[in-house]
Image (cartoon, rainbow, N blue to C red; front, top):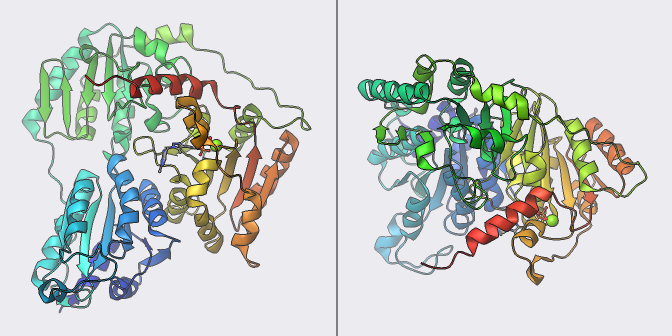
Length: 559
Ligand SMILES: Cc1ncc(Cn2nnc(CCOP(=O)(O)OP(=O)(O)O)c2C)c(N)n1
Ligand SMILES: [Mg+2]
């Protein structure tokens, strides 16, 4: 039997666990969309534009482990590149599928619509190569299975996005049917001798130190190494801190949890204990200017053991071709228990700050808003924090067991959280989702709330209206940080268009906020947008400190 190239791709997407693919139709991908629709186990989800599509797929991948977005040539793909850039920086396997011009056009020397007006139609493919781990163009049917499988295999094994370009006249062409999916899922295992050498050397280093500590990084997730990390933590018995981009990858109710390590804007004095230790065992960590508060909190290399996605390094040692999960699991069986950093931490652990409820009739402020959002977070909640002061409000939240935290701290594109939380909700419909997003970010992708209305997603959106780009104000202010205010709550009526179930509230006091939250809790058939109006300078003190050091890092004179 045979299948078509579009059918082959549909089967592969289904076999790797995709149920929803995110699309914006365009004449270069319509036949392909039909072929995907013919697969009963795939449901397309339309987004308002390809930027939102790519962010929704990025969010879907955060919950589902892999995602796919289907766009049309150039005009679609160029917008989708923003979300693919995010997937690349955030280590998420998102498959970007682009419909492209008829294979005869280059030979016929035709100029085409949806192009930059050139005869060379490979520019998109060349661009995609830069932001994916594999990019293919399916121009011949006998090559389709190999190219499609290659792109998907690379995407899954490297946990990075890939690009599959399918000309409009190829989707319905016959090709060989897919072989067993195992051939696509197969991954290179850790090399045994290297793994043993790495674990022995690392155990020797850790066992030789007086007060080691563990630091969790974001790649624990894409490496599937969270449980192995927990095992290592419990066998070592030391204090465990997390980078801001790894919040919720280690349970915050765990007795060894000491907070978010973010330099001077750390939580729970994690910086005090980490900087007291004599070895930081970093697992899946990514140290950037933002995650090190302008490089002020990057530990010296002599002080760090870095276990990364597929390699381990520490002073005078490097081991490649080993998987993080295998390394942490094996190390857990080799380290000697050493809880000195926990003993010390018991002496400096700050007592939990009890925030008093504000007077209900008093004007709402950031602190009261955060206090009320904190109460909303339970074990089934995923909290999305958008770039902005929402990062800091989110990082400061305490997560009960099972609660999750999603932020885009490498790519940091404003507008990500609305489509990303929508895409995430498509993968895990039973999860409770709270999105914290600033007014500036909301203006980038606001229209995706209408898809939450259409698909009846009860996402609670806290739109923090501080009248401008406050995170930018704290880094470097200027007239460009002032934006046109919207009546955000009124947008909901526009998006409902008479038959939606979304609700919108504008709140000015703590009492109004509490009422709006109660109404949000009972709105199970659509999103609830709560616009919280606070003073533009009412931001976290952490943002002010962090912004200062990031600005200093940005200002370094050229060498
Ligand atoms: C796509 C994209 N364009 C510009 C930026 C720079 N940027 N980062 N944060 C902002 C402003 C965020 O403002 P809001 O969402 O209102 O957040 P806060 O006022 O800080 O709560 C900008 C303009 C960015 N991070 N992403
Ligand atoms: Mg703002």
